[in-house]
Image 1 (cartoon, rainbow, N blue to C red):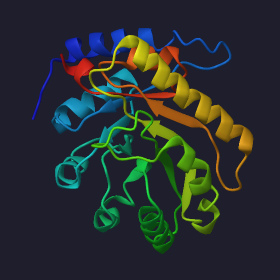
Image 2: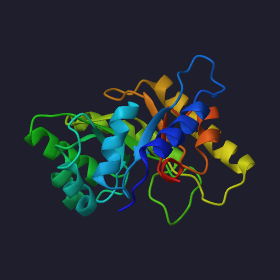
Image 3: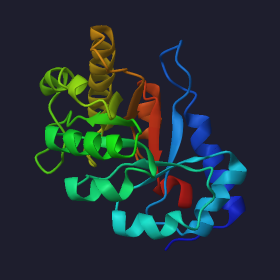
Image 4: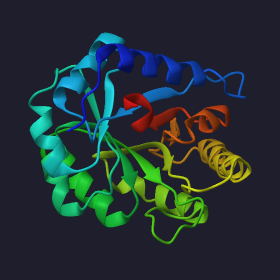
Length: 228
C-alpha cells in the first residue's frame, strides 16, 4: 500500500483546500474534503488526524475491513464503491455514509441491516449524469420517483446525491455535467420529499475537483491529488 511523507501530505491537503473556497454560489460553504484512502496504508490514514481531516473513503470490503482496526477511532468512514447487497452486513456498523445508493434492492438491504442494529444510515443517491453505460447510477429523471419510495425504509436516510464524471471530459463538458447535477440537487431540495434531506452533493475527484467546487459541490472525493 502507498505511503507518503507527512510534510508532503500536509502540503497536498493545503493545496486542495485552497481550491475548495472558489465556488460561485456565494451563500454556500466551501466543499468538504473527503480523503479517499483505498490505496494507502493505515499509517498514512492516521496522519490525516493531525491535519483535521477525519472523513475518509473506502470502496472494497476485503481491503477496508483490515485497515479499520488500525486507524484512530475518530475517523468517519464513507463508502464510495459499488455495494453488493451481500456485502452490506460487513460495513453497516462501520460507515457514516454510503455514497452509492442506486437501486431498490440495495435500499431494502441497508434498511434491514440498519434496523437490525438500531441505527439509521445516511446515504447519497448515485446519478449517472453523463449516461455512461459502464457506470452505475440512475438517470436524472429516475431520481425523484426513487426518492418518493424511501419513506418505506426507515433505517435509511437519503441526504443528497453523488455523481462521477467521464474521465476524458473537457472543461466545458465537466461544467455542463456538474451544473446539471447542481440543478437537479436544487430541484429535489425544493421538492421536499418526505423523509429525504437534500444536504450533500458529492461530486469531483482528483482530476476535476476544482471545477466541481466552483459548480457547487458540497463534498469532493480526493485520492491521487493527496498522495503525489
